Length: 329
Image 1 (tube, rainbow, N blue to C red):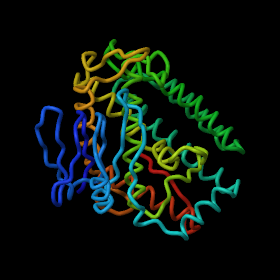
Image 2 (image 1 turned 60 degrees about the vertical axis):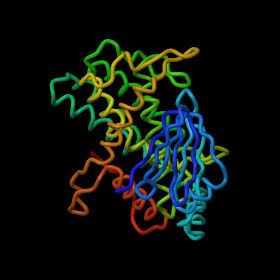
Image 3 (image 1 turned 90 degrees about the vertical axis):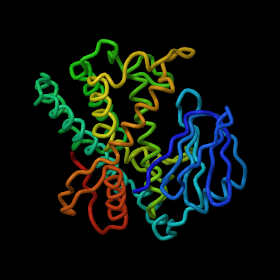
Image 4 (image 1 turned 180 degrees about the vertical axis):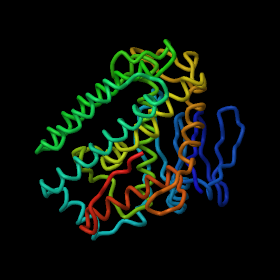
């Protein structure tokens, strides 16, 4: 099973014969296992040249860049080797059909809501009193069916997520990680910094999986296709955020794997330091490799491959073969 590779420090990315070498600022060289690498995430300042990009294209390895505050900057997306002209036309036609697009967008929202409720139910069964919140969220979820536009669906989802986030302080047993409210760019406290970092990791994971399918990541349905580079990965990530990011955050904080010392203040916001990022990424990588029994396939699959299967289901919805039913944990 291939995996994502993470470069946290600054240095040079070099091609040497038929492999890649990362030369750190102190001169130490690390050989990268390209044959086992699915994609690369670069958090430090990276120097590279055209030979490296040609090699990444040859090996079909996307390279994701993040700035010093962990914001996603962009991706070197190698030549699409699986893109299908037929499917791209199908994606575009599907997007331009208002009824079809709205239906698919609502399915993403429904999947997201279902998994948020699953997370709360999980902790409610383990002694966290969330009965009233779950009841209120279920009532709000029912209102999704009455929405006729994507904007209306996103408004319901926004209210739903606000109520969901208010449950975080009940789940987390650490006063150093109070939620208060959702803040982004910059995150204003440690918990928001963790959520933003985890979501960014998931966006790039989904983008890497889209690269292994016939889908074009630039055509999304819940998130408007416009001048942003990619939007389909944002759509699909909504379904998996609660189970892959939020539950991981709860577990790591409650087990003291992530602590206040793993954060620092920069300018107006709070960000994870290098140590914190490495700890989180290791746990996130392990989560992606975790296998679960898939009821449809009657075998175990990893969470990473589960994302790929979700993309295949979306392909079938777009081509009219089968309606898309989001994964429910």
